[in-house]
Image (cartoon, rainbow, N blue to C red; front, top):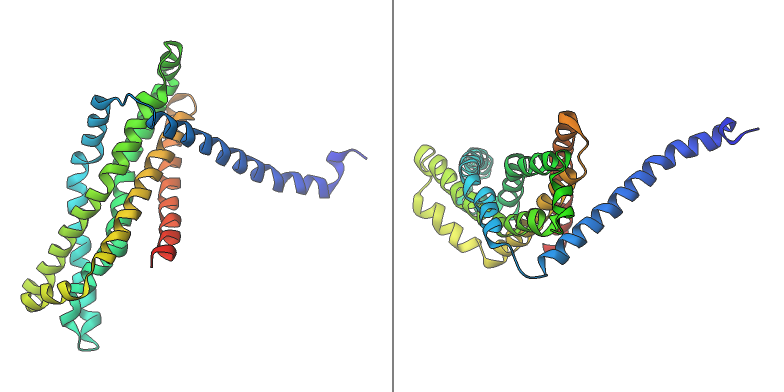
Length: 263
């Protein structure tokens, strides 16, 4: 009897094929990130390209970050007020909003917004360069695509994410103030006074670590998916979709592990 006629072997092959594919893909992604880091640590750094990426990831993401932060803070203000009102503790609305934003919502939602806006665009851009053979042209000219394409994205994403998370948190606290103080009559001195009493520097440090990690994940996955994009518009579209989905999932996974280690 041939091996293909054995049901057990066929089942084992069907189970093993995805495992082999995922393992190979993870290994290739690791090699890709290693080459990018090696290029980042080897001078010279392409400063002009880096500034363009900083502008793209940072300044051009401010509007969506501010809007998302404002309405996230306002929702927290409403939900927190009515939850705290049940136990007669509306005076703690300020620290509740601040801690929720600092420890979790600021870096996570900010990273998801940057993924949707900047990460998807980077993936599509690299994917189009791949199918147009521009990356192959760089290699033929003796230029490293890692140094010219991926290193600026990595550094810009890692550098900008903590700043964007900080803006998100400030605007979110302002949104909570608008709802809690202006609309629900919480005392302003209580809102900010309790916040100063309960928010410590140890609540800010995890936000920075998470934002740095999320920036690296965004750059890594989106550049990798664009680099491995298939040919044609369908290939780029598929790679961009996969990049956004995989990056979003990895952000939540990394967030869990960092939370378990930092708190």
